[in-house]
Length: 235
Ligand code: DX5
Ligand code: ZN
Image: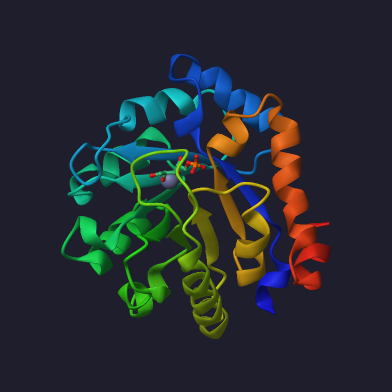
């Protein structure tokens, strides 16, 4: 399986951090072994919550060398993408529902030299990305409805993850398959078995007393999947 070559990536979501100490929290998870830092941008319109914009991304950029995995839950997204790119976002992921022209949006992200991602809500079918796979570096499956941390994992998405794994393998492209929402050491084995290569976790990392242990516990979940090849590759 092609994903067996991928190292498991852990992306703590800053949504569950102490917002009065964001720089310090970013440095702490980098020191604790995170691979990416996941940034949830919410506008109070596309999702029923508000977080932060490009100014905060720019401020965080000075605190960490981790790739900034930027999840835009805003509509429209296109007018703000250049600002996030300039602020230092490394990956920019959008929901298909946030604008009328997903293909154009992905072209825009790539034209700015950033990795482009598409995020699928629980009710969004995989067909939404079938014809733009050539422009996609990351696919994110929401296993909660976007807007809040600390929600319960929606297990009905496991079939979607497996379908996407098949689509990615068939494409022959090195697309990272991320899972966002309700990820814990208890839910991680099932999503890894279904073919995920990146775990996004807010509460499970920032809600834990020891970030290093929390990240290690998520990595250990790879050893409890039914895919021995993946377990070996993430050793
Ligand atoms: C929700 C965000 C998630 C959130 C996950 O809209 O996209 O990244 O931080 O939080 P947990 O891991 O607590 O479910
Ligand atoms: Zn997110």
